[in-house]
Length: 418
Image 1: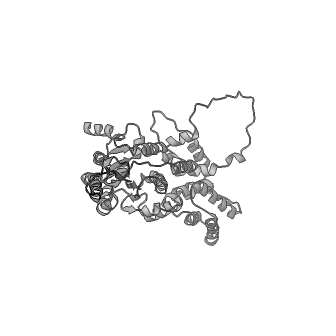
Image 2: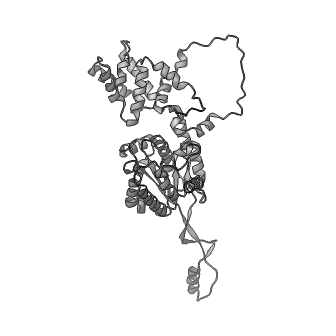
Image 3: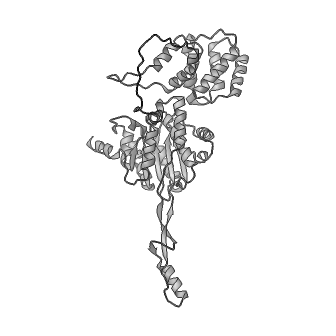
């Protein structure tokens, strides 16, 4: 908390009103803060006193922050709201467009961006109107430009603001994962079937003294496969995993979706089954309970150990009947690559199809250089991106195509050449 020494607490005597406005800024930045927690914060500051800046920070922190991912957002909004002498400079710097050239592109920090937008929201109401100085007005024909929704489809989840993420979640709630039914070995009687039912034909003939009056027919029964999702929630994957779990909740609760059952697992340093939480109708309640169940959010990554736990404890329960497995991970694992390859091979042999969704494919020229990716890639049927709405739309279109391999062929060629 060394940066707290530069903060200047405002001298406004209406401290309660300042805390209320501060809570509104946090809520706009994405923290789930209601009137009850705001009242608790005012009472806590009243009880703790207002003599020490560090105590004031942690008093509000204890009232408004209850998840690890909210800490950085709280710190950013606190520094800006409670009069950091450099806050305006920082906000303006974050709002300037990034130069794309020979310099390495560095994306803006997600928490800082959301905090900036929360504090700048409504700023136009306090700015004076621009005076017309007789300048020439330039009219731009934007009829051929990309619409807001189309731009949002291609935007990286990690670079979305709070409002953009809200719109993206609404779009994801309308997406579906269609799947083709599987023809079973079992058959069912049909009046206009495609297969002759000799056994039933002879049984009917025996009832008529051995005379065959007509031929019975049958069709193969159809059944729907299970969908099993293994979602990496380590530090490098947390933002993407939250969005994909939001999408998975919509798939789990969609009527007439085609899937027999949808099973969801998260893994970081350990494997967690969150299937029952995804069945909750309210998406916010479902993700909140799933986050409470999985205690390794934004932690380390042990893909091999977690896949071993899945293959040992859950594979036979959920991968029967031709299940399709979606593995959501960046593949950045530092454990033994040979053990990881064995677990991937076993998972591949147990599933009807294994599709790997990797957000790292958003980079042009992505190559399988990490040892974890090199160990996993040969044992998947399809290798696809999962960093935007457009990539998930492509997944929905490709999941029923048996011949879809995504980027696997290209990357396997690079793997063999390298």
